[in-house]
Figure: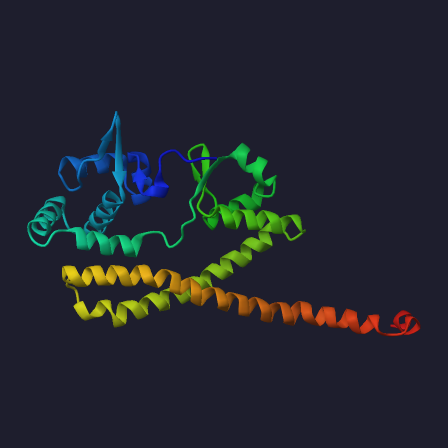
Length: 261
C-alpha cells in the first residue's frame, strides 16, 4: 500500500512530521508560532516540511528533556542564528538520528495484512509481533517499520517453522545486536565526541563529525554482515552438517546393514 506524502525525498506533511518526530501536531504548530521552527513550504493549500524541520524538532525535544523552557530554547536558537548559524548543528543532528536503513515502512489495514500474509500474523503471533514492534497499530491501520522482516517471517512460516518460535529468535537476536551496537557507538563517543566535553564542536568540526557518522553507516554494515554469515555457517555445520553426514554414511552402508540398525 503506498504511503501518502513523499517521505523518501525527505518531505513531510504535518501529520507525518509529528509521527517522525514523536511530537503532536499541536506542539509543532506552537513551535512554529514561536519561531522555533521555520514555516513550511507552501504548495497550494498544503504545507510541506523537510528534514531540516525534523532535525530542529529533535533538537528541541532533547533540550526540553534536559529541562530547558521554550523561552530558553528560543534564546538559544536566536544566539546560534546570530553567530555561526545553526546549520552545522542540524547537519550533525541529522547524521546521528536519521534512520540507519533506507527501508521505508508500509501501512496495512488488518484486511490487507491477512491478504498479504494469510492468518499467520493473527492471535498470539500478532500480539508477539506487536510487542517486538514489528507491527505497530496506528488507528485503523498497522505500521510495518521493516516490511523485509515481515516478508521473511511469512516465507519461513510457509516452510513449517512456527512463527512464534521465529519471533522468539528475533527477540534474542535484537538483544544481542543492541548490545553490540551499544559498544560500537560508545567507541565513537569515547574516542571522538568526548574530546569536546559538554561543549558543542566548532562549525567546521561539526561538519567533519557529521561526515564521519555518514561514513560509519556502510562500514558497520560491511563489518556486521560477514559476522552474521560466519555465525550462520558455524550453526549450519554444527546442527545440519552432522545430520547430513549421518545420512550420507548410512547411504554407503550395505542395504542389509541399514535394515539392522
